[in-house]
Length: 115
Length: 115
Image 1 (cartoon, rainbow over the protein chains, first blue to last red):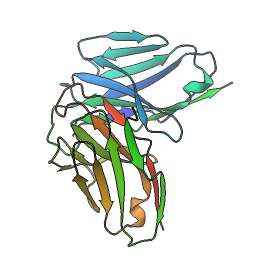
Image 2: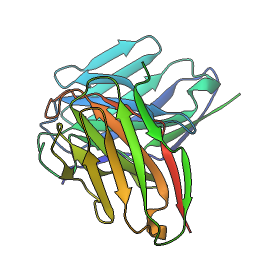
Image 3: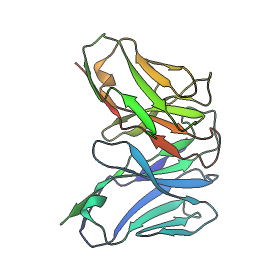
């Protein structure tokens, strides 16, 4: 079935850029998402990209999509301690009636920002 | 505008006890979801409801039941709790089930321990 893979941990220094990577399997995905989960909280939609786009920029966030390689990345510029969180990649899938629902989530990448 | 509200935030049960997790959304969303989050497993879909009056099994439905009481409320019931159901449970809602751009909004979670 469909799957979304991402590395589990990333550690960066405050002020550096962070790059979180994700690979997905459903070539028919139309939207891909990044969710952020702060400690003790639910997931919050951070940004998303439509599959006909290569890049989307939103302030300190840059999303890059390589549809040929099914690779998605999230770059956070000037990373701050407040960016410490778990970041989930997710893809929309077309099998709406399936047991996986409408979105497939990766396992999440825990970003630690050191001062 | 509270978004997605889950109760309780914390719960400790003994094996065999039953309980119901409550979820309500005030965004007039059609679809609602229950996920569980376990370390190293990411988010797994338990049940979802595409619209009022309908419910469907997700990836890990065994040991759970759900009720879509009305458009606002979607409850998750554990009839006979087991230690394997120790987890953090998240309710989520989305505007349009089957949409290829269904952004989900999450509650803050219920931390459940089954002893």
